[in-house]
Length: 463
Image (cartoon, one colour):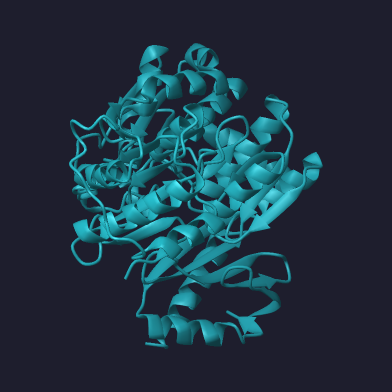
């Protein structure tokens, strides 16, 4: 019933995600913390989903009942702010109540290590060992001397101001539309833009646990309101963050979606060529070939991991890493925390525009002329588990696909067909939802669409 996926435990509210099960997970985390570090406090944060604040309060009550000093955020708070606060305050860790980009009927629990990042696989394994091991302890947290509320925003903002040249952005006078997608990122990019007098409009900022009828994931199909707002207001860029603000998406001045792969490539080039930073470069299995092309150009070591930021986080802790990112829009950057941060990435996109003094579409076009045009898309197919398994078995045995010869099948995380021109298509079962995801990167938009259409036809035959 309770199983941790690529980033914590997520489930459907009232089905498996119940008060009792939330307390069971909180007790397992409390038991784990008591084993490794029973002196330092733990932070609990939460997003804007249905009942998230109450679930967070339950977790705080379990931690306090176990003798652990506990801080609870005063309001919905982005995951990267929670993670930063853990590291900044030298805490034992954090519980974050969120289901990130999942549909509104889902909620979840992420655990953050004392380094301010995703729980490593080894930590998750230890927490899972404690599930159902001990009886749940709970007290009402208020009026307990181990419990207090906290507002971590000030320190976070001060840190971000050291990483982004907001004065340069202000001088360039951009006009940005900010879209937190009704999530925990409401007000965060806005606060810094207001402080520096940077023109902006924030949309989808009211609390709406239904997220306006779309999943709070900053991908093309969910950003119609942002695209419309950019075009109607003649803005220079649209910036979106997901439900807990650890992922980023963007829209250029023409209303064209800028996917996470292009954002990653822009950030990598900027960090090296403009900010003069060095270090390893990490990409997950479903992330663009543009990343290794640029890493090789700069003579930087490239790492590839399974999907899940916890694998990137592990490398941040072990190696000198400049940047690590994944297809879903989560990107972590050196000198910050080993964690995705959609707020920081949004501001760095504004910094890129300010540095080049050009529209973001032109900056992207110049990058493509340098490294080649790359196009990407993905489809998510909701399938029963038995159909998923049957499909993946057949996919694993193919030698051709859509009339193209498969040069190699890579199996780091799913089945990835590498074609003779090094373009690819990946079939992978989601770690958090009953979904089979199909991702592809090609050299034309037309080939992207054709391959995804062929993939859908193949999978439909399995039903």
